[in-house]
Length: 462
Image (cartoon, rainbow, N blue to C red; front, side):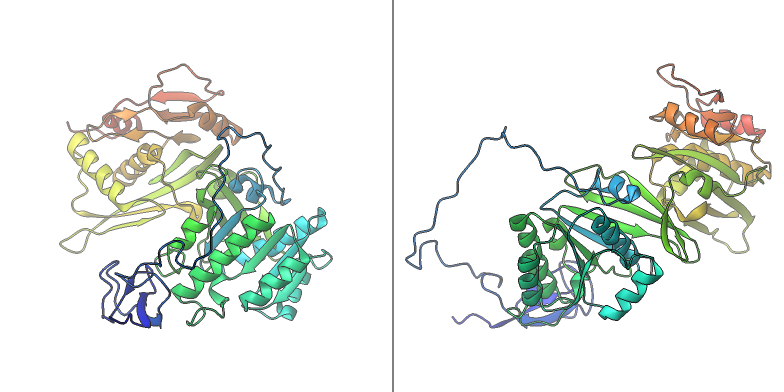
C-alpha cells in the first residue's frame, strides 16, 4: 500500500494525523490541523528502514565512564546579574536556551542589552533577527546606548544561510529572534508551523552542541501564555525561561521553568525605563510601594523566591454581592487555593464569605506559587471582612492546612531578616521546630487559623 505524501499536523501540540479533522484528539484544540509534506517515519504505522539497509557499515557509538575526568567549562557571565542568577550563575557553553514572553514585554530589549554586555566583556556575539530590519535593531541599540558594542548583526530567516554564516564567524553566543520566523528549505511548510519550528530548533541545538557556543532562541507565546509551537522544542533545549510582566506596570519578572544547569525557582526582577531594562537588586522595596500604615484588607507577605527573599503586599476585598452566586476574582495567586482558604475560614473560624464577592490581588504584578502565602492571604481576607487593618509594620507567612493548623515555612530566618531590613518590627508566623534568629522582629506565633483571627481582633466562632 502506498504511503501518503502529506499529513496533517496540529499547530498546538504537534500531533500528526493521516487525515484532516476539525478537532485534534490529542490536545482537544479546534481548527489547528494544517497539511504538511510527510517526513520519513512520521506517518502513523510507518517505520524507518532497517539499520544497515543501505549497505553502509555505521560506526559504533563509544561510551565513557560516568565519573569522567574532564573539568566542566567555565560559565560565561552576561554582565546582567539578574539574568545570570536565573541561568544558574551564567551561560553554559554548548547550551541552548529558549526565552518566551508576551509581545512587547521586553524580550528583544533584554537580549540586545545582554549581547552588548557580553561583547564589551570580550565575547564574540552574533545577533540574528528575523522580525526586524537591521536598521531597526541598530536604532534600538542607539536608544539603549549599546551601539558601541561589537555585536555581529544579521537580518535573515533562511536557516541554511544562518548556519553557514555562524560556522564562518564561530561566535561564543548566538541570539536568534525569533525561532518562529526561521524556515528550512528541506521542510515543505510555512514558517512558524510545527514542522518548521521543530526542524529549525533541532538544527540550531545540534549546532550549539557541536560548536560549543551558546544559542539563545526567542519564542512567541500563545494566548494561554505557553510558548507557541510543539512542546518538543522545550524538550530539545537546556533551559526554558519566561519573561513576565503586566501591561501598565514597569516591573518585569524573569523566571526559569526548566534548567539543566541550575535551579528553576530563581527569579530575576527588572524595571522597564526609557533607556531599557534596569536590574532591581532589592525588589521588595518596589513591590511594597509607599511605606506607612496600610488599610484594611492589606497584608505584607514575606516570601522566598529561590534564594532571594521578597516582600510583597497582598490585597483583599470582600464586598456585598448583588447576585445569587458570589464572585471570586484572583490576580497573581491560585484561584483553587483561594477557595480552600475561604472554606477553612468558614469551617474552622465561622467567618462567612457566602454572601460576599471576594477579590484578591498580589500588588506589583508578581505571581506567587509558594504555599507559605496561605496565612498572609487569610490575614488579608479576615482584615477585609472585619474592615480592620493589620498591625502596623507587620509581615505574615505560613502554610494553612485543611484542619486550620498553621504549618512551619522554610527559611523563616531569611524572611525575617528581609523584613527587618525594610523596617518591619513584628510578624505573624507559625511555630518553628528549631529556634532560629528573628533578626530583631517580634514574632507572634500562630498555630491555628483561629489564633490569627484573634490576633487581628476578630472573634472566631468555633
